[in-house]
Image 1 (cartoon, one colour):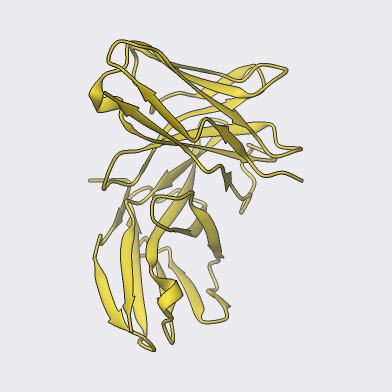
Image 2 (tube, helix red, strand yellow):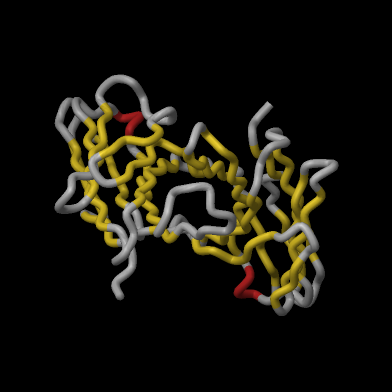
Length: 117
Length: 112
């Protein structure tokens, strides 16, 4: 039972290019969360998705950022026209349920380190 | 005020010491609480859940104080391998879904 898989592990982009980060949740998990961690800072919530639905995107910048979790395939976090300030570690996590289940645990992927030159 | 606040540290303690971290949260309707551990910018890993009655897992004890809105983590007999950043996580309701909010983390270094 593979864990949460993220790829690529490292992604280098020049300013103005697009970045696509992929996340495959654990088997049996249909809820995905994306977090961003800037250098020397904590994890900041970006978006929470269920299959084909965005449940909560309150932490995601309104421009240039988008996320999807299609019926088939991994969840994708897309950053258009990247800027240096987008350089960060992006972690994806999944859970089996997303309802208000006490102590439902999150499992994290190894993250994608995005570097914008 | 941040939703979840932690003392960033760093806490530098000798091996064998007892160390405690606190984490405060602002949403009184928060329901569930966890401690995660993060090593050197790797992915966070669940350390333990936090129950109202307090719970213990080996050298680790977690407690919740709902009245004062804080959770704590106590580590006894610190080991070098305990060096990491400890993140508290608070779960609250956001509409019909749940929202997980992480603290910024407390850095612990256990010295030989």
